Length: 626
Ligand SMILES: [Zn+2]
Ligand SMILES: [Zn+2]
Image (cartoon, rainbow, N blue to C red; front, side, top):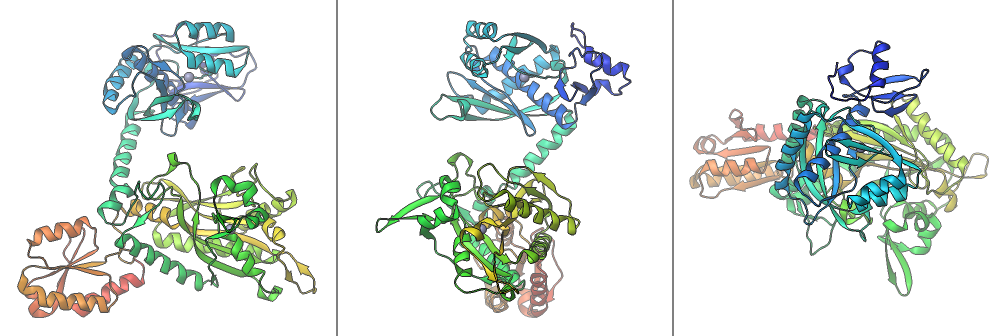
């Protein structure tokens, strides 16, 4: 069991021991009648107690948050005059925001970490003390901790709790681990600026991030993954592979596609068009800007305006489209539709603009201008189930081709939304039914739907098991109502169609970013913007090299050549850095026998083959999307 220097009774822990709970040395807190408390908490007789283990989700959160107190104490000891603010647990770790005479720097971190180790070694207990808010304000005022004073005043409660470990006392609700010695494995990762309470009119604070785990093995594994993620960083690889760039002088969140990146996009777009056509979709295209009046009718102006850009033509206000729905509905409405015409599946590689805060923009993953593989399916209510199933099958096929596994979530009505309760209910039930009919496991994500309808979100998992939201399937009865869409049913009467909004890959920009990291830039042959490169050993091999180049081009293989009078080793290294699947090295034997000796980017040499045979092989690989 835990040996602790705590001099107050560990009542909660004692109670757990009496109840015969095992593994008490791994218990960091106790759940009393469902509420998380310190293990020193004194429960009354009939309270229901459960242990919270350090390696559980809640235990880790408590550990990480406790680590933020330890960091704050270390920073206070090292940097006199620093003011503390808040320090929550976050995914994998914690942060604490400080106000200091200068921002903290990366090179401050080793010192702070060293101090934290001292504090952990000293094994100070976390001691809870409750007092009136007035007393607490006096306490923090005496220490010039004005952020704490503001927090207490804003809380507006009678009593607050303070926690002390060693020399440091912080305002906190708790719970915490029993003592600092429990914090075994942590690492400070980075510094950043953050406004006090996220408000840009308030002071800029200095934030220090750290990670913490229940043991050093878990920490090491996390750091290894972090290193791996850095190697796969799509912004770095995007530059190395000549795929894309972003430019301050163009504007934040706008991507410039270089030849290889644009070609990669083209390959994906061509793939998408084929896959949609063979599933009965029709390709459509709407304009980039539409009158603001129309955005008012759809509810976008009311519910989505802050994400939109507006412009003016001839004194008339226009909105730049953030979604592609409206034109598709007008296409539907351009003719009288019968039940026999349904379903209608309109597909558009739709360029959209959405305003995202500059702080969240990142490479290709969060941008302000992007292309969605968007479609709207208009169908009878009876066809809805089948159509949702069709989209789910589509997602399954496509994710299989790219090698992604995924989870499914259903997001329900958000606060800001349009449409009747009845419509939301029908739409949500339709999505749930489709999932259950197909025996697909799913989670419910309360309040995260689109403003016009609930949705199924597809969270794919990449090679590092990170989750990404890409495909969504949204069910909507409201926009068909607002745009007066109808079809004539068997009874000769007008009926409302249901509408499915769906994307499969989502934003192509983002999907390409995910693909770069997933494959670490080494795209499978069918996707690689350059599939092969022809390299000559000496100048006398150039004539045959040119013949090979032309043959591959004629076979529609995306090929480059490097006939420079440079050492072969250098040419091979450069091609490897470009992660080109095949290097075709042309020496004397190849020239004389009219064949090739392909070399893979891994460095592996394949046997000598006739040129025709090599072309057949690579074409088969592309056909099979490998
Ligand atoms: Zn705390
Ligand atoms: Zn839509």
